Length: 222
Image (cartoon, rainbow, N blue to C red; front, side, top):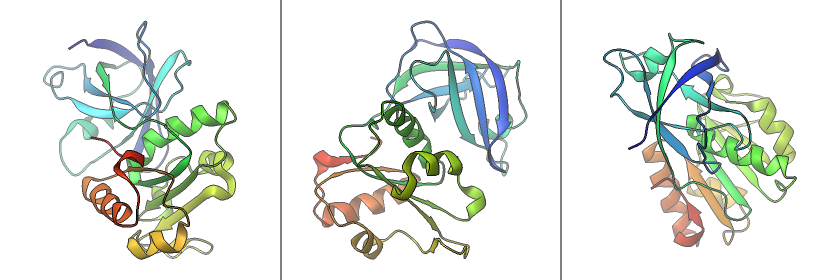
C-alpha cells in the first residue's frame, strides 16, 4: 500500500464541528470525484490509525482538500485533527471508493455524507453539466449544514434541506422515510446516489429498491 506524507497548507472550521483541511498534493496522485483515501496523522502513535476521508477538491487543482467532522466525545483521530493546523503533516494512502457520477439523478445525503457529493457537484458545475441533478440533504439543525451557500449557488431550486430537530421557516422538519421519498420524487427510474451513516444508507436504499429503483442505478459506498 503506497503512502504519501503531505503538509497541511491551511485548516479552518466551516461549521462548529466540521474542519476543512487543504494539504499538499503528491505528484501523479489522482482520484475520481466522489472517491476517498485513508488518512492518518504523522505524529508518534498516530501514524497507523487510518480513517477514510473524501476528497472535496477538484482533480485539476494543485492541492487536496478534505472536510472532516470532528468528534470531540472520544480521543480518536478526528478529535486529534481538531487540534492540528497548518504546518502539521498527514499520511495519505491509496485512493478508493465506489461513489462516482454516472448519470444525472437524485443525490440523498445525511450530515457529513455530503462530502463525496460536493466533489461531484463542483466537477459538474465547472463543466456546466449539473443541470438535471437534485440534492436532498438532511441534518439535525441548520447549523450542521456543510457548504450550504455553495450548494445553493450550484443547485439553486434543485436543493432540498431537511431538518430533524429544528423548525426553520421555509424548510422541512421531518425525516427522510418511504413516504417522504414518494411525496418528493416523481421518477424512480433515474440514478440515485446515497451517502451518510451506515443505517441511513441501508434504510434509504431499502426504500428506494422497494419503490422500483434497480441496483444498477443505485450508487452507494460498498
